[in-house]
Length: 487
Image (tube, rainbow, N blue to C red; front, side):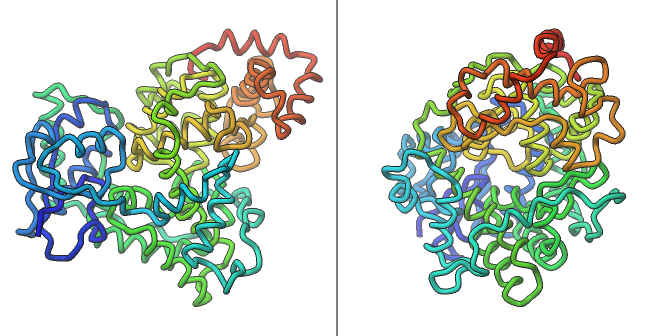
């Protein structure tokens, strides 16, 4: 049987044709020279590769400067997850066959057939098609419970007066000799090879092996899934994990098949162990949003990543690029940036409504933001961040995959978190020393982009509000003066 070359995001058994298939893994140092990755992301990837090769004589791990240097024999490969990697495997003469992609639920041909002829590609429409196509949370031809979407039950603010949700923490990762050697190698790369990282080193927080990933999945479904739904959009300064699964990194390494993940969640509902709203919200994230983003990466043209319809041209300021949370006084942004620095991970609402929202308000380059998310998050890959950041977070494609900009003022953060109570800024104030940078930034964003947003019916109400502001001129001047200074 021909050896299967597995990339570092294809490490699960579903990337092989049989359990006995020989495997090639390549640890390419050039990957870490090209980008300044988060230190914990580099550790996770190397640990996962080395653990996959441990005690398995069918797996050959080659450490080389480049992938091309490592390939000395015929191999087959599953369709990779980036255009650059696809171009590479198509050029290498040792690659005998490129198989269809694995690690996602809906096949590319099915997505293309669904998308054909549609003016707007809406995730909700794709998600309903995927539910029907794969028979997930369906009772015959009808959605389980009679509704496709239970978002209305999953938008609760955090409970009042609590610092943490009353849910068990996920099982801790126990590092071993492989992790110790990875850490030593990364230290040496920094010291001797000039390879740089961003963020803090720390104990490995995410699974690097399939047994670790399965343990996390079992724990989440049993202990955290029941409360996931109501608080999936909520934030607590003292509880960065909330009830989230922390499975995205494991799925994006290929350690878990997304279909097995949603089947476990559905089984919990069928057994009466988790409420439908939580299960539906979780399933939506995986067979809906995750698959949707993957397919858009390939469906949109290659230069989609350069989209910049709002003409946002400011470079990322140094304090943000370097994860300097201590330079920031705004409590929400400081805490979330510290989470990226210390864990390489925050959940989807801090990503969208704290980090992405602030960048869009300030007019930072969308491509630079996509690259920052790719490098700084343990679950970040080019396919993950292209449409997520360019289209949704920064609205740089003027609505090709999102119906409105995800911009908000401090009122949203105040409602959905406990950040504002201890902050030096007031979410109700837009001009002056106490003006919330999100509240002021929201109105400045609308003022700057009013002509481009005028035809969006979902923006009609906020744009009408913009016209009623008596202090708009002072607000715009205030935000110009703020510039790239840390808030």
